[in-house]
Length: 204
Image (cartoon, rainbow, N blue to C red):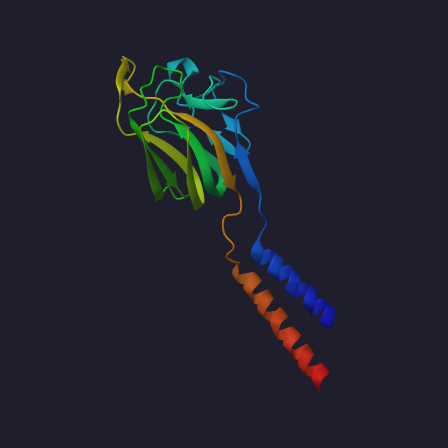
């Protein structure tokens, strides 16, 4: 009986800890000039404009050691959505993706939303042509949006001002939280009580 109670308590503790399933998207397996749709458990925006060529386009132009993506037509408010909410650890971004003559002087806001479309946090990335790793460590992220806050060039007559950014190495963890469910708490309590009773009986 004591062995069974210990097993229950152990299983409950494991369920409280939860499973972790880390992921990273580095676009290394995506074909050059592809407009991204779904990659792993992430769906990238495809606005459907510019003859289907708008969205995140895969490029390899010396900015990083491998493929990365940029907003193909300098679109604002492009983003991507996770199938299930995650902990977003970090991503790499550059203000000059080396694709479009960008000056790297404009800024971009990275907006993180939960499943209810509530804003969790915003991070401003300003200036510079080097790649930057932006660390978040934000739980419960469902959607990430890139808001180009200022523009360096009235690009063409499609929709006014445009600006570009490059994106790479999206690192996330499917483990949202270590907070146990109510049922797990009940099982854990029963296990602890059972162990206590067993010890008292043995002592008597």
